[in-house]
Image (cartoon, rainbow, N blue to C red; front, side, top):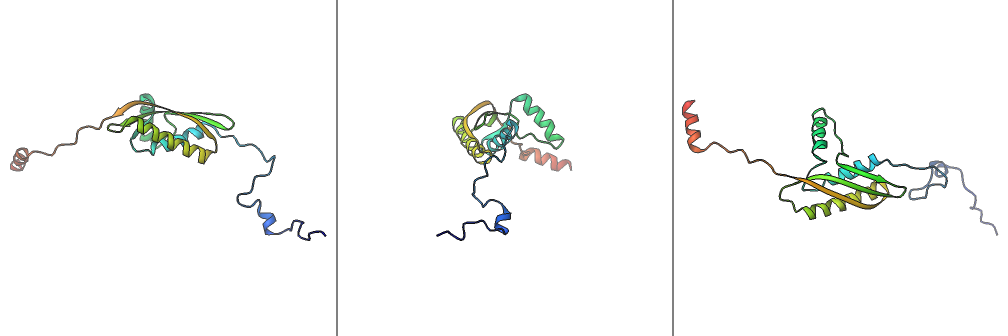
Length: 157
């Protein structure tokens, strides 16, 4: 006995394309993801980790300051990615905030980059190398005028 529903039915379901979660048809083409795209994803993930002051070496940070002044930004500054067919390796240079435990910071950055690149790009991350090349120390807080200086200032006015 032949199943009468074995033939495809033309209709909205047949026209709409593959169902959600269905595999793409074989031979449908090739996807290439550039090193710049992977570096940008990794850079955004690294910057989101608390304790990261900035990414890049001193010259790249200086160039970044110029870009910021003209309203542009480079999310991949300080990040280099080597992309293969199915795997990627990422190198990150950064400046950490003073007071942040550096080894713990590096581990948190690695976890964030692994997660973001594997989820958003779909490539297996084989390594994330991190170079912490400086520590940012904020300047002293602005002092308020002392009581004596305030009295002199008020007397002059």
